Amino acid sequence: MPEVSKETRALILRSNRFLANSLSEHDLVTDEDVEEANEKLLEAVDSGNLRQMSVLNILIYELKKLEEKDYIDFLLKERQIGLIALRNYRPRPIGNEMNDPEKCWATWTVPFDLVGDYYLVATAYYLSQPVIDYWEKIADKPIVWYATTIESVTETIDRLADTDSAETEGVE
Amino acid sequence: MGNKNPRICIVDDDEDFASLLADVFSQASYEAVMMGDPTEAETRIREEEFSLVITDMRMPSMDGSELARRIRKVKPELPIIMVSGFLDSTHREKMEADGIIALYEKPLSVFSLLKNAAKIISESKKNGSRSKNGSGDPTSTASGTNGLGFKFSALPCESKAAKNFAESLYERRNRKQNICIITPAGSPFREVVADFFQWVENDKTGCHLIEPVELSKDSLANLVSAASEKGIENLILAVPETEDLDSKQQDQIGRGTRTGTFRDQWKGHIRFLFGIGQDVETIYQDGSLSDELYLAMGGSELTIPSLRDCPEDIKSIARNFTLEDGSKLTWEDNALNPLTGYDWPGNHRELTKFLSRLASDHAPEPISSDAVNTALQTEFAESKTEDNSAAPTDLRTSLLDCRESYLRGLNTLLDGDQEAVSSIADVSPKLVDQIVSQ
Image 1 (cartoon, rainbow over the protein chains, first blue to last red):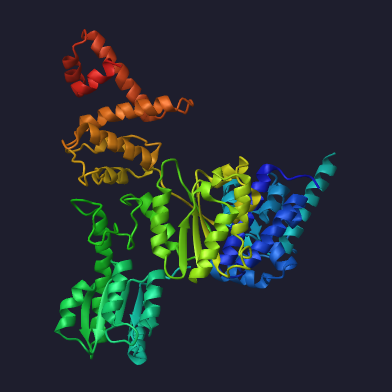
Image 2 (image 1 turned 90 degrees about the horizontal axis):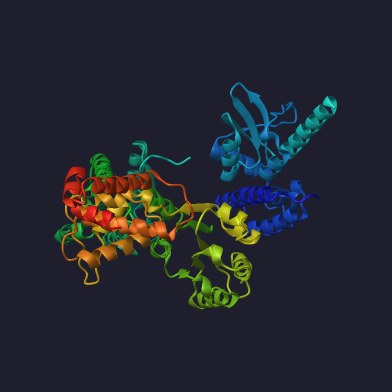
């Protein structure tokens, strides 16, 4: 596995730190759960596999300490954000810094369209403020945020990467 | 989403009467919270925000006067109304001393109470802002809380930035998560921690500041062991200059933040307040923080505002600067103004040092604007010598340079007639003398 850059590593840890903190602050998980997930996160970061570098993923699928449905319900109720399933949506590569897969994995966020003057961005990390700040800083237009599942983010990043490589091959 | 309606705390062991009041206030768009037990009420009032307390006088575990006295200690600005069927003249006389703002005898017109409550809440808000902007000594309010509604002495909180910081920290006082306090050079981290500790310390919560040199696995274990012996359930540990900890100490803190680390000795919870010199990201990317400690730093990062962002606080600190004999510096009109034109890169520590120097040169005489300007020139020259790191020149520095050059030029043109220079440039002869003799 290629080693992640120092900058991405910092972004991964920051995104996850704030997400884990929000989850425990809102009693969705306990401090002990967060500690266990953090240890596994550090192992994942050392392994270099970007897809495993998520406390949310670890808490939901590996440790089974959190139901994704409860997390999404909380987001919809408390943050009043729209939910989107991207499986049937054809994501459109935006073609700038916003489609860097490394940054998408680091923040579990994927920009999937540009409509008028707005980027449509889906994230599994809406509770992590640094994630929102990061994307709003690099976007040159306002963002309409959607909450989505981990699976949806994973699948969309992969599809965008496939589209990107297919386009590159076509050009060649 | 937070509820913006004023919250009323109704404390009465008579459930029927409390329900009646709660219904009336709820229908008038207040958020009414009923509590039958005054001890529970005291705890919740400490931890939550209320706009008004309505309490009964006679209750089983604590009477209304005692509850009012306890509330007054922690939230002196929170208005309290007493409602009771058992009021005598002694109660009326003690009312004001206990912090009770109005007294109602049962049976009463709840609608009159409702109307008066609205008025009291509105006046209480106005008084809060008045105490913040009051004439005379703006740092002194009746309650000594700078309109914050809680005690906070580390910063004067005359400025919005300092007030926001104090409120954000206070809001987080009863959470479990660690807090990272970004502390610009010379800012009063230890004083901030002392304020935080007095908000939260009680029989079940122990608070300690651990100096970096004292931090070790053994010192953490000793604190845990003492907490266990005293029946303490929560430990709050403040660590200044976290970025200066060596990797071994960081590892120990990283472990210390884990709930399970001391499980065999103690079942409680440890919360850390990390003091850190600059932005956590920068320090992490510099390699001064381990991954584990960085992850353990929690999701709250608050920055003690720099003095340059708090001009009102600069004046307040100067006005209240106390000399060794307990007296305060006296200032001529407008003498404080020049202080706000300087950036104070060394923040509170630099300002305090500067004030001590001014005091030793001038006290007990009133300090003039010229004296401040002259001392600032020296301060400025010193800080310039100390920092030759080619930092970008700010507007003030450029202007001061221009002024010096102008005064020197004028002095040459006028053949060293400093009095004429002073008169033409409209500055004090002392300043002219200081600049031309450099």
